[in-house]
Image (cartoon, rainbow, N blue to C red; front, side, top):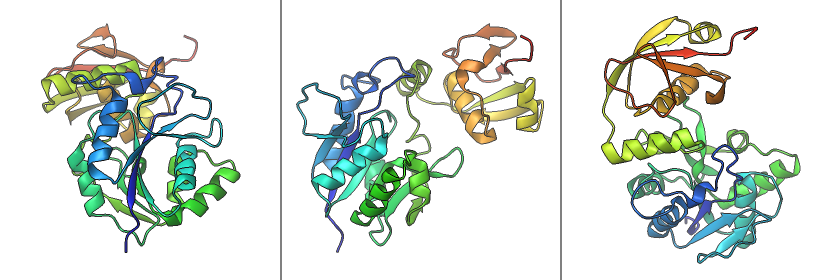
Length: 276
């Protein structure tokens, strides 16, 4: 018999790259990412809790679960949830997933395998398991505590060490997240105007050529902005550089990362060059 399934919305991050609390952001409609996430989780689980940082003293209308450790990342939130109810399974969801829908979570639950420690989706970018939209069974509690005691803070690293039931995403962009203002612009434009498939010619400059294995490529993308395209390319080619280190030109003119993409655009990516 399967353990009862509770929901846990992770909202205890520092939001350093966004520059403001991501959970408070409104991407579409009138609900903040926090309220939207809790609403979805309540519809598909027996109850939903809000995971908050150990030092977060703000009042919330929803029931909260406070991290037991400071600065231990999302795994600390899951540890606190298991302490609250060690006999329950926890559907853990990051708050910054504006494309995640109720139907995707229903698919995850329908294909749950309680014989494994976790049931998770794999990334559309690199095929690796995604830890922040995952069902963690009670059997995951002991290895989780051991990992944290051994200073393991990376949720993906923890996930790679337990028994997993891996699933492909039923909706390709469901786990695209919002870490930066540029990601927020991508999400808002995509959700307001819809995503269409565009053919883009990408030119890789400097060290990016070697990493990509080519100087240029014609690709199809549904990204709405240059930032969305860069994230696709970064994950696909395992680029080590982050967006802040790259300049982008669209049709031979430098543009901000929030610039919309159009069919048949030419996008050039310029990494930092030695000496300048």
